[in-house]
Amino acid sequence: MNPETINWGFIGCGEVTKHKSGPAFQKVKNSTVVAVMSRDMENAQVYAKEQGIKKWY
Image 1 (cartoon, rainbow, N blue to C red):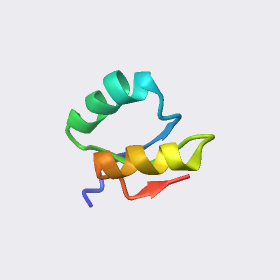
Image 2: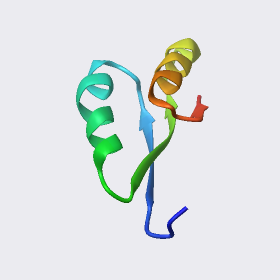
Image 3: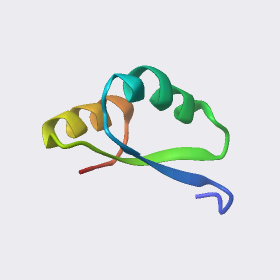
Image 4: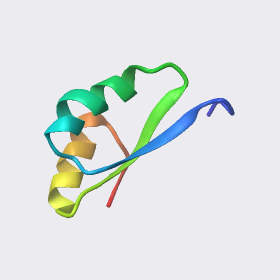
């Protein structure tokens, strides 16, 4: 991992994350989404797997 990489975690996996925030953060240079969380664990897991994110809560 590049020491200048910013690691992000999303709180919530709703429509804004799926269609706006998520895709934007995935495209930013030196930025990576490392985890997501949702009140519904299954929702977090589905979103994480779809996006290649390794951790969900």
